[in-house]
Image (cartoon, rainbow, N blue to C red; front, side):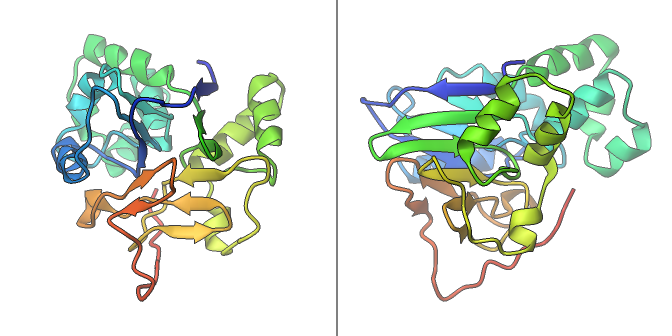
Length: 241
């Protein structure tokens, strides 16, 4: 697995990021249609958690094969891989929405695991206004360069940094507004909120489409959210695995 994947600036169209999908690809397509997403020139970046809980998790391979769709590995992709390798208990994966994969035969499980295992932990996207970073849950450092070093240089502690990128809620739980230096913005999901939460330059965009909310798309060039953030509403969050 290449832990960081970098994308050059998109000179032909727009780049968007989207919050946790959790097997709701039809609903995601409707959100893309609403912003007139053009797959011939636009790109879509996912903060991960493509699978589990929703009714269309099986479509993940189809979506990852689209040349304009790119995703980081979320904690649910990590769990799916672990389950396929028989290193995650049935009851734990079932509790976290993995029944769709549990119903597959061994070869089918392996097919999903091969693709999901290769997803990067972090994505970097060049924009005209500067570099944007994407991880699933949080950046465990105050500087993006520190995360780059931690993910690019193998070491005994690397697994801890990967786990933090995929599981941590420290920043949003403590309402840490310090942000991450060396990058224009960091886009994350993992923690469902009523609307996007902006803490420093870290944008939390999982607005719970998979649990009755809606998908938020953020334009990486302008950092404008679709639908727009309503300043009159709070971004109350609800912890979920």
